[in-house]
Image (cartoon, rainbow, N blue to C red; front, side, top):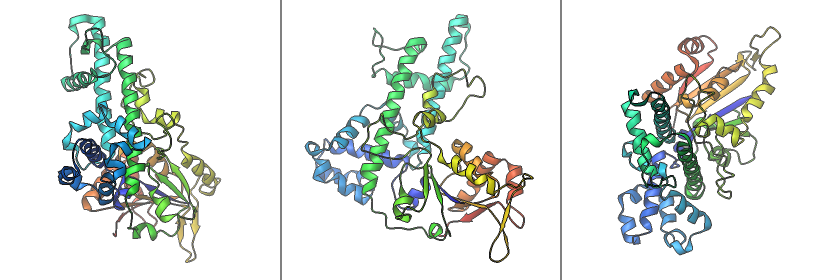
Length: 397
């Protein structure tokens, strides 16, 4: 079985503007064009940085003239205005040129700070003024975020929400509104990718991908169908979009895109469930993303292990030994946030993994991330010998 795993770098390699900041720049321009002339928009520095196809679409009468907006564009306009997460992202200009993972990192930092404040308030109610703030940074971040939330429908009678009140039903109402805001953000991303990025003409094909002899399965961490559209017109592959995929014809309730955080609690993680809806494993289950790759692996297992639980090796036409499965990873940072899936794939019996990297810095980063995924002993053991199981390969184009 031959499996290709793709991450956001795969889309970027095809010239698609799918970075975190690409979305934020589009949001900025979309808001700007509503109150300015075409001439001013064309001179706008952020507009000038956008993809040419997207710029052309933004200046079209369909988009520029708000009276001509389709229902999808009207929805997008409504979603990006006053979204608490977008407002928080806009305050972080230092995140320019980062990937989607930064959405998740920023959301995670917010959640962890609020979780800290919630636990602190529980302690404060037990012991009173003797409760001490041990983590000032988290406490400050939580207070700043709650200050932004005052504009949402979670106000008390005095129109002011104190951090002391982040407890009980008041805290629940804020968390529920935050989850609603997260779903608005996810739907806005879906429209961005399906309505704007879809306008980008992809003219590049990757020689590294085309040189792979055979691909049976594709596991995509992206929401887009780039491989399917460019390389698999005859639908010869099976696909697993582990984080969901875009469909602008549905609403946010039916959206299956996963955008969340990983488990950050070492203890009491089964008891502390106030923020469970923000966690990836919950979203995968709730949105029923299926995780088809596990079905593929289980069906393949009988061909990879013999009755003595030893790995089976195959013999090719040249009488050389080969592993039963080939795993190719392209455009994925190997970030720890996807450790559970990557580890399962890489450590599957009789599997040879080829990891593509861009340059020496990316090579070093991927080695370090692989240590976090499989451990240094496993990595060293599988990178050497006559039949290495893990290979790092430079990208040719």
